[in-house]
View 1 (tube, one colour):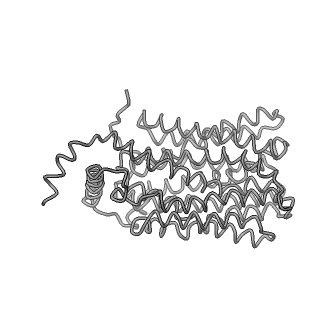
View 2 (tube, one colour):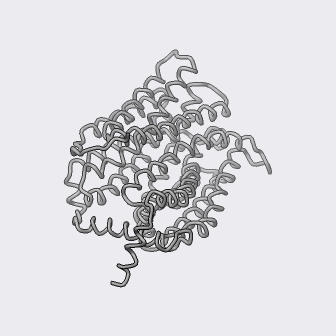
View 3 (cartoon, helix red, strand yellow):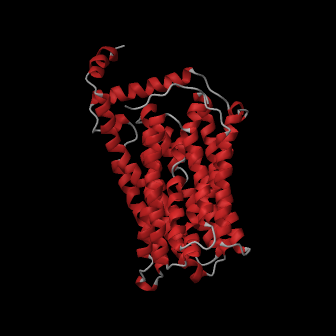
Length: 439
């Protein structure tokens, strides 16, 4: 074993804390930017809808089906995408994803019929499908389990950050009318371009594994890969749970049903929030997008506070339940008749805080309520329910609006989804473990 003598002194020279920071600063900012662009191109149709509806004369039902059909396409390549990152190349796969979804997003500007709109949304889902699961796998190539949670929390923060940034940017783009094209068309065109550019940049900036990174010293690379391999070997030694074994566990179904109910409300809320804000405030498109951006800015704070608090206390379950239940409460509060606009927006800003408070602790629950092998099998199953909810919620809100129900009824429906989700998660039994609180 010729590597053994060399590895010991190399390991002694490593400062794990400094190496973690070095890797985090090299990997996370770029991935964070990728996910910001991804979520903006997924959700910007909610902003564009405010003007698209008048130009294209699409019904609310058409928008509901179009919003939701994205998630059907998304399911097609989610699992294959994760496998390609593991067995082929994250760098090349992410570049393909970025370029294809940027082109599809830009081409959405030229839809004229409901069928064209459905096809654009379906293929956008297919184009983007492998990114999130691919990033989860990619992090396993760079971060040990103790650091992966913080990396994922940073990724979750990209969602409200993207929407908070996207609302005012989209509002500005809606006022562009170059070449006789409506502003909402330029919104799709110009917000799709960064994805294509980043796809090309990815090929040069992103590295598949530590051994490919020239910015890591040889002994740093050797130490990190030995840590990751030791962790993988420990998991292999614990055995492997089959899909059928995992599906017989009540906790798996409670987690799946919990996120299904919550995301039925959550994904619909992302796409329909600008419409709801316009309905309850009566403001102009620019005012509506400014309010939407403020609501999502509260979401950025919610992600940060949730991560800090749940890490400090060691609690994941009740942080998750509280976030879901309070989102339902604040959404319901915003529907009380006769309130001034400022009070309605206060309710919705508080809702923005709690709506992004629960995801980070939720995704920690499989790892603390299930064995390692069962968690690995179950996370994909749970995430399938999360994405199917995106189709159901958006389609149902579109149906409600098309059948004459106002924005307050739609918000109450979304509130009910969050409340049901909190009940499922509250029923989960968490193993008693010792927690370490930060000083």
